[in-house]
Image: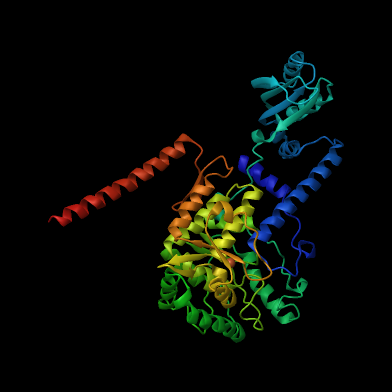
Length: 508
Ligand SMILES: [Fe+2]
């Protein structure tokens, strides 16, 4: 019920705009960080216009966001209107404790039950006391109670606090199948809006890109990913980039990338003359780290993209960059996903790091999504790491772009140690190469630092992914913790048995 209401709120305040010239495009390179910022802005604007509409409809210009959400929940059905709602009200009392009797009488009139009451001297001028009252009553009566109290001159303010109507935590997917709802695009198909897009003047290219994107729109959880018969031109674009990566990889890529790349070659998935099919890649990843792919029609909202990582699902585009520009693409395409992201998603440590970013994003605030996207940008896309005192690349945008790779490893940019608290606030460069890169000691070290930083975020609950059910569990009850302890005990038993057997075999 709470999930349904939260989902409805999400829809109510959903992004109704897509990227446009007003966001600085077409001149900017698209990125997850920029998307997150745009999302924050649009959600704020959309909320404001939804509020203004609701206030005009109700002819009540004092309505708050919480009240609009409450009204919305009450208007679902006659049953929803009569459902019992717990709520907290903050009342600013002008005339001292005498007003308490009025509050209690009014709550009683609306058949409400007072569950908690506390007062304290107010810090606001002209107000004697603030009262916090927790009540439970039907939604329709609660709305009337608020209106009635507001009409009294005894109160300088009557506020419904949002915590008690479950509106603070943004909706997030609980099961891998919920990712069917996480395909919100920040952009429609827009090369025609972007004069700098290599496909801007090529109608045939735009139609082909659209045809491939349709597959993603139709895709549902559990489907296998349809194959694409790539054209000779598309395969030759792949081949040019593939051969360059092959040449630069031995010297500049981290060892985990090289190892996984080799396995993809052995599996006959990475070959020079043919673009790999996403379904084959997805099956390969499943065997190595449990990651799978979902086709994406373009750049998704940061929240949706990060949420999918929590389920070990990587949303991948399937179309190919324009053949006039094989070494640069202003948006992600399948060459970037395949050569940049896929090898490391087959590495257990890196896969875990990616999933941690995804899990941290579930239910995070808009500003936290911006910070997580910035961390993603400087690690998964542009990250460098140390290997035997040498600098290596692990970021997908580096490994799939020769120019930026060589720049990152030259003496031109500034290198800083990866520290999530400062990295998450670092403005990034989206016009030229990055002037700053962050260096991780190792994936393990990056994971540890990231975990410590994430624990300082505002979300009031912890989540974990259950791979058996493909479900994200919110650890918010003793029963759920009991289940987790039971599972950990089973794992500990296997570990203890294994240690004992190894010890025993050493003395035989
Ligand atoms: Fe990427």
